[in-house]
Length: 433
Image (cartoon, rainbow, N blue to C red; front, side, top):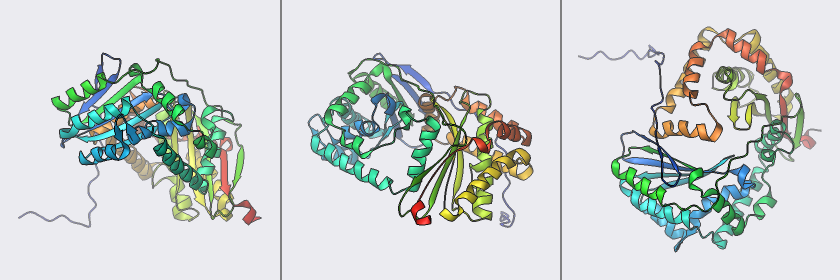
């Protein structure tokens, strides 16, 4: 008879062993498209991500970049938007689009048995979008409504203000979305952006899932038949130019019930030897539920429902951000507590059980990348999107294993000085005065 488990005893937690990312398969197609693929999983489904070089920065308008791919499914060739939607639904496919800084990405999830039908539709939508005026007008109305709604979100406005502080006034990526920019989107602009994107030698495609020979051949043939509509080009990387350390800006919002606090400072790039160790130091500060900021400001003092910190890096540069919302009466106190916790990483870094939990959380995040074929392919895609080094996964694992209180204290002292924070606060200051 099998002995029943003792439910009063917690399960044994074992450290992760050495983890490695399985290699991707790379192919350079005759027309210049680079195909990245990884086969795995236990269900006959696959994901195709087409990454066209050229995003918000190259297109020049975030509003246009957000619509250039989404609108290809609103009419193409001899098909209307409703006919395209019906084909996708009938074949069990799902699509998504992402406009990133230097890439425009089309994601398609497909059943293996329906891949030929979906690829036929994709070829028509990508090759000959109609950009019908009536559908564009509707999309602009939706985008305008979403934009106006975002003007009532203190976190959005504080985030835009922090972006200007981190990237620098006048940086192309520091320009926020505007109602005027949405109004200026037109068919000619979308067609020009489409021609700029549809350049095979400037296209990377990521295929993941249970990839059999039929799927592989269908994808290969589909990609080889995509036309080339524009000249090849190199993306433009313009380094961030942060405003002076300690700068603080206030954004007013009449009727706001809470303040949003967004703070940040520049950090070393992803290729720096310090990047991974600093990332886990910032994780200790505010990157998971048991972090210092959450434990102190949320759990112990109840000043905010949530607070977090993260390290972000892209081709323009890297920076740390801290975000929280709180009652306006507590804003300065929350800032003081943030400063104190940053200093505390130097004077009293995580050790013993706190360090063990931090390292386990960091290792778990790494392990999640390996859970699915799409996760593995996403890791490889990030090398293109944000410039992660080829050995980024291994670097993180080494940094986790080597993490000590002394390393955390050294990273915090070197990079996380509270007086260097740029701070943006959004709230209703008229109501408070």
